[in-house]
Image (cartoon, rainbow, N blue to C red; front, side):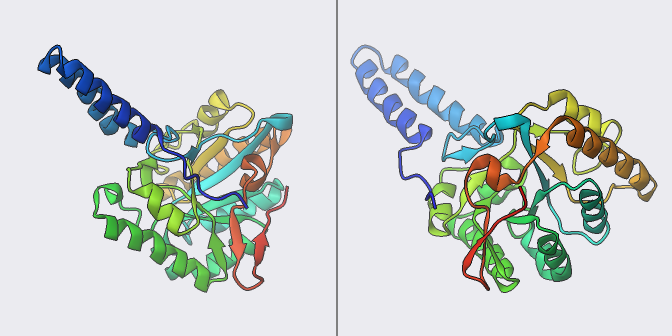
Length: 275
């Protein structure tokens, strides 16, 4: 199995280059020496909010584009108000997906984790509480958050090998934490900007308009904010799934990124989703 990369990150490389350049410019002008350091600081401030940028650590945001392949992923579940609906629709259209689950939700609804696995889908780590400020917490808090989620899912028979940060935000400390837990970071390349199923109208169209072979699609395993929107949400998913079935080859995340997504703790071997 490929292991998390130990190569210097773009942040480490550019930080070293900025420091060297600043020292050289200092000879001519202390003011000029501030320029490369300021640019590096600006990059550090912007990069965390660019999912898949890989500035602080390697992040997989796209897969291989063989035979118009794409992968489906769902964030923030499981939820009794949305996960069964998604599983029914996925089964109806014979599609496979990866569910990036929140640890607390998994602990509360273990039967939904079991149902996801029973239908041949895979599970990823999406943090313990989906704290949007997780990357601003202390290194210890970050490590314990990810580790606790791993422990919860391990108790349910599966150990994820992929992690998706809340909101796709990263930081310099995440690289070492993921290496300790034998996880790699996986983001996405196609999303509907649905605000966690707050914006349902034309959800399918927003995905299909942007979709390209090799894309990792990100949707949400959350009920719409208003119950009245539930039927509209399901219709949009049906429209999306039908178009994917007709025009693309939907494969497992494992297949499109060519890296295992999870391991069965009970069997001691990798769990593989349907192709």
